[in-house]
Image (tube, rainbow, N blue to C red; front, top):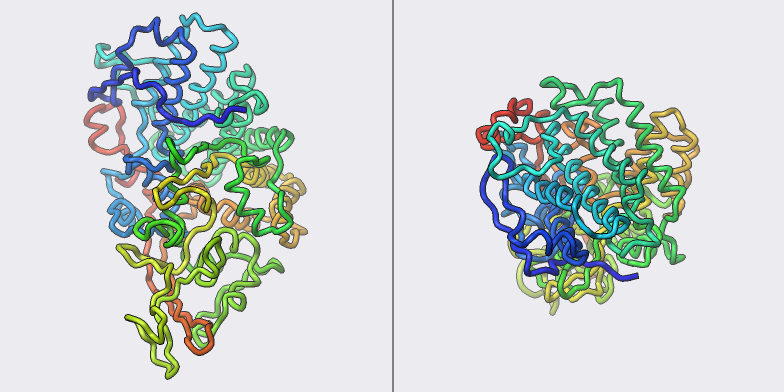
Length: 581
């Protein structure tokens, strides 16, 4: 099976652009009979479209926006913060200061235009019909995924499915917003068309990296889950431009349930290759020979580099100015269960009153803590252990913060200092030690859909469809892999807790909190970090708290992002603005 790398393989396709209501731009300057009748050029065109879907990837390139999207969405929930405090958008977002001008936008109509033009031009292509159908399917899937991304951010948006001519009358270009429900229904109907007409291949017939029929099912599972949640917990406003009527809830739960079941009954299985449950879980996000992955982007570490490993590794594995860029909060660490299946928050005062080893403080936590989180004392290839201490307690009890004490540096070799805010924790999940990280050449895959998520989508949908036994079984499959005690009964909080831990740092938690409409109380808090002080006499460590390490705020209006005054001025049909802005 040939590995597909989403690279720009055609330097000859040159795109120009001009401003317009929805970011109009001429498609290309190459004769149609060269492009649309040549499968190689058509394939290259499709790769270009996918390369501009910035919301999915974490590539190391000059596109800082592309890199920051994935950081920011992982740093504006209740699990972690961005370790780069100089990023104004992140700071503004965390502080609840997003105003009518928005920030980190996901307005992708320039790419939608390329997709619509492609679909129109391919109607007259002389490429064989079977091959053409699959080529069209890849673009229709990309368009559905793009609309799903935008509806998550803005609610109702214009559904544009035809190529807009540059010289079209202005009234044809001033496209109004569709209702939020109409956009979700469009995404789901596009997935249905792909599945029912077999416009995407089965996994065994696809190049690695191409979307398949099961990828369309995965998008359908996720989109319908979000729509059902909005129908249940959201509020319909501005005539349905935001919100979904409550009488649609069960219909969407059923759609998500059915799509999830189709995947669960398919060729996928939870990754289980090692008897070491920590190693096994860690490898599930690195090993490309992976029965759990439904869809991922793959990298060669040469032409296309993954930035995730570079920016989330420890100092020493990569240059110090790049590492530990997402820093989990202590409150997230406290949410992990013990091996016995119990959540035991720290007794904050008691913890500071004794010396600890890593095993004493963290050793009894479940496997996913050790697979997902680095902290002082964690093991990692080449580091035994990771040294995150920031100070030494001398033999006389004095805490020394600078210089050298008895031949030991007072700051651990892996402690983050340069231009970063460090919580005492960093992310191990998805970090691959095998890439050339010193030269910013990470090569581990970036998973977009996996069976673990689908099982939890299935559990949630099943629960609200009164299929509690099926919900329980799905959640227990997740727990069984990491050797946690199986639940004997299921409820909403157990499902939500499992999502919080299992899907952490996969760019999903922020959206879960928003679709459940609990972001206001969950995000609006002051968060805690820790400092470790190395005790010279015992080799153990003391804990110091970084109180108010981050303070974040979430306002009701932030369940939707603003359309923005600029866009509305450019196209008055986009009015009214979303509530609260």
